[in-house]
Image (cartoon, rainbow, N blue to C red):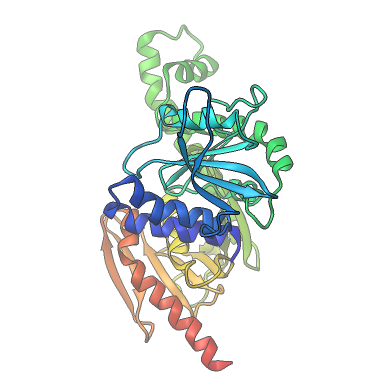
Length: 378
């Protein structure tokens, strides 16, 4: 599997099992070791590749341990410190990493709770771990643009020089994206004042600034939606299916979806009606969730999306005869359409987009049925 497939597969496992994980040891066994073994490709049972409870005396600190040390080329290259998944990561958790970073050959340190992974290096001062990560991987909201950088830390493609060279740019781009995301969700007074001063000709008083708080938030949301929809509408105007990369700064993610003209199997038989199709943020998120779930059965490259006026379809191989799911989100009550072996659609009500995870087994079974039929044909 590709690095993307492996990451999405682990993300699905974390979402399904995290509620049952209560301790640090359980977090390590259920999530951190699979990350090291499956995603990064190191043999967790080979002490020449992965050293658990790694010990190195640090000054007056004797016998202190780091959870894992990853070895590549006979040298310790990556240090990993794990906390339990129920505990959000804080800088205080990295004290041991700080101490060990200066007395080992490692240039990369990872702090994780099994769901969030913070990657550190020594950009600010040689041989001293930075206080802020250069890469932040959140399995609850994966940023696909980071996965190519993560691939450079895998056993098969280890390229430390390339990682370090790109770390500075990654660090600040990541921080800027998070700041932008926070501002788009809840604008600060400085952000509001900045835009108000650009469009309001009089003095920006506290009363005016209060009024613009709502206006800036609305304008930001509408701008993002318009950018997404403009790209998708352009794609829908093409004769053939098109891969469209949709960048959503507020959510800190970039999504590539395949958008095709609605076929006669939908209610959009008139090509002109395709211009009326509007793909929402919820539909894009729903597509990502379905893709993350079924990537355990098939490569993500085979999972395509088709939006219509009435529903958002998820297909295997962009084939109308292989529907995986339909997202009925253009109404107050959302529904997930799943398919049985005879391809009969069953609509399941959703309280939120995240509820799609509750029906993961049905979605996987649908894809598994298609794959098994392929095997029978061959």
